[in-house]
Length: 359
Image (cartoon, rainbow, N blue to C red; front, side, top):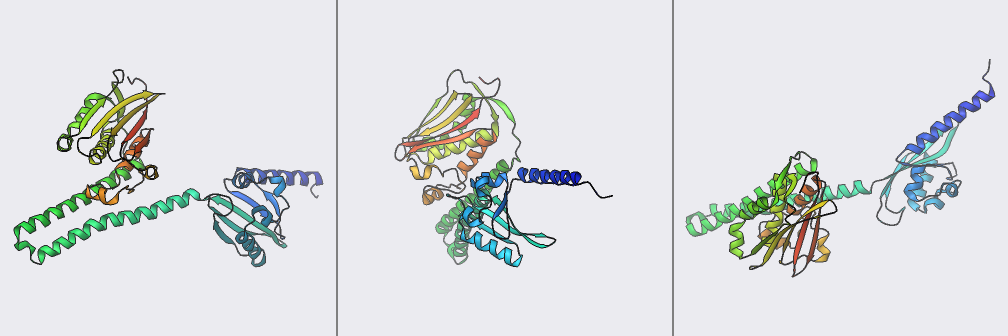
């Protein structure tokens, strides 16, 4: 006995609803084109992704929807050959958004039914890929430079400089400096990697701010005296404690204080201050140093970014200090802000969310 027409219609409607639900829930944009290249299906993700009005896009040729020659050509090739194609393009929307499109044939029992286009926004993926390539290039350069110097001085010593004690001592001192730079670079790379990946579990403890900061300053006493800087600590009476990971907080503030000492000319002023506002506790390190140009300010927290590469390397910087500070702040659920004027100085402020019981 054959199935009743009503049952078939209901089953078809049910299958159609299931298909619609699947398409609506997909993160990828999906468009289906008939054999003439005209759209007969556009899912919600595609509408949101490309700013498409579904009703206006339906029954329109793909060229009218996107106005992209590459896509139009690949759709025609897929319809003709039945082969799938992939296209990565930044030209579908204004700006720098990059999409990866898969153009695949839709085949039925009686032949081609058209083409399906699935789209994914890969802008972030491309950004991370670019960062990875730049990171590898930067690490290679940062390792190669001191190694080349070490190798050069070792060869010079082997060629006879060992027989001249004063020259040998000077060369060995340079080799030691480059070896220390390599050691610092590797230590910073490992530290940054662990913090970024969450491999260092936060051990939040109640830290008394004033003794903590005074102890930190004490570790820089010799350098502060050498440059005759004036250090001021400004902590409000009501702000006695902070909850943070003590080792990471020490590392972050030490990096900021180290930079302030390095880039502030002799007889400069450095201030470490604390504040509380809108549920956030701020710890700031300010100086009267050389400052940072506005064009560089937005990039100072990038790995290996240096405002003055030669000066930074000469002073022993690895180019990772501020990146480490940034990720320590993020690990605490906080932020870091930079404010600077060339010739007037800089202020770096780490903010932490106030935890219950802090005062």
